[in-house]
Image: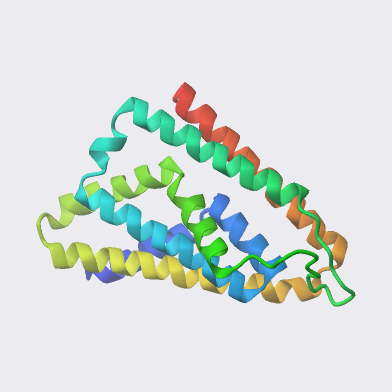
Length: 208
């Protein structure tokens, strides 16, 4: 099978996994619209590219150090908890058409790009996942750089494409939800992000 197709298969598999970035993507798309969801997804996409590049260049040596691993886990956990608390306590104003009524300045494009980027890149388990994939691909393709590049292009663009599809679907769903449900989604996403953050810190500290 062609490396690109193998990457596409892996991309579709990853698209089905649940994680903090996915919950943030859905919540943003429902409350902020397709544009905001797109830029959040693009931030996640850019972080995946960053991780793959650094992994390819040898970041595995940095994260294999136990101290660096723990520090990365704690930092990532704190960021997820902060995102969760902000999402939970942020006031949501919705009109009769289930559209957001902003009482403050609407976050700019850069805000969503950075949120998506750091939400993903600060998760050490994302790093170790890509490191594992890199090791596996290296054993299959060796020094064949075109094959490795083709594989990761297939994986990353498939993930990005499915994330954009989730953005569109989530934005369509909001028209069928009443205001109370939208607010409840906001609360649930906030709690889930905080739980992910706490679990992340506990896991890297206690190594379970």
